[in-house]
Length: 212
Ligand SMILES: [Zn+2]
Ligand SMILES: [Zn+2]
Image (cartoon, rainbow, N blue to C red; front, side):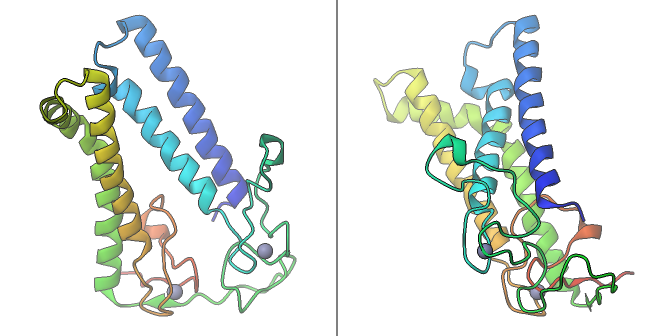
């Protein structure tokens, strides 16, 4: 399990790499005419939206303090720590059985043998990624539709409307995953879709899938 700080650093690194890679690609192959249906535009854009949401949702479960946006100005941005900067309760694991991080006792691992729950988690996680990638297919017909609907609006407006529609649908898939309740503790089990099924665990009680 990697920490919040490293995970956020990896996400920010990926965002930077995506922007640089797409700029280089456009420099070599020429900028596309309809930039909003080009993957070089929507891929860093979609990732950027995800990153912003991820940062927004990095809050302490005890006192609800934002861990990255610690104030109103850009100078109040900080990397998150493993403990809340405000009330110092741990950011991972259950809030009730909070253990000091220095503790060397092996945490008890609870498993759930409800295959339906894990199947649902996998389906909803996959849906998020399918919809993300699905913009490649949906972008053009949606833009065409909005060009017709918003006539005589320009292509730019139609493209933006198409992107906003798809973005709303994409956000819904994130909501659909995060509202899934854990079979063991009944709390919301996943806070983001970036997990492998073999590492999947409830973000509240830490229950994992029974092996085999
Ligand atoms: Zn706190
Ligand atoms: Zn749980």
